[in-house]
Length: 153
Ligand code: RB5
Image 1 (cartoon, rainbow, N blue to C red):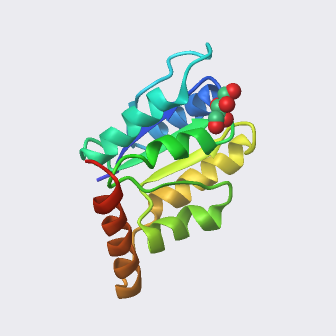
Image 2 (cartoon, protein in one colour; image 1 turned 90 degrees about the horizontal axis):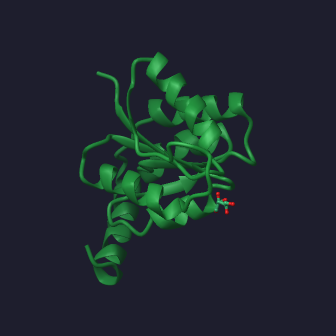
Image 3 (spheres, rainbow, N blue to C red; image 1 turned 30 degrees about the vertical axis):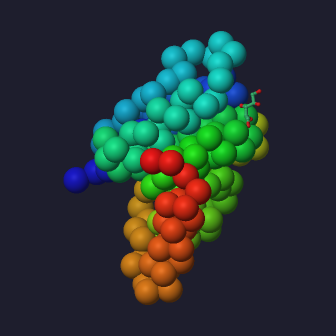
């Protein structure tokens, strides 16, 4: 079964989000669109928070966030324990981030990455699976320890 993908963007990422939403729906993914609903100025933490919560709560298998640069969205999403968000503007990071680091939210900047590259990045992100190798599990365990010590859940 295809993954459920939560999507979110502020005005800086709205146009690319619309492209990615159509692209994923066309490939048979279930797309949960958490806004923005238009390109009017908006605040990226609102959409990053909604997508991060959906991934944390298991409503979505993966999340994709788009803002102007990807920076604000990734900062906001990573405040959620259990969310591992990263900016990827290349295909290597998009799959290795999942395989090694169990990245579950992909962040991109519409002002940085072109539409066709963004589609390929999304493809590699969604096709990738965490390797489960001991060294990566160990490192993730250390991240979880940081979350327990420094974040309220
Ligand atoms: C909005 O202008 C812009 O700051 C935002 O989309 C994002 O790039 C923040 O990191």
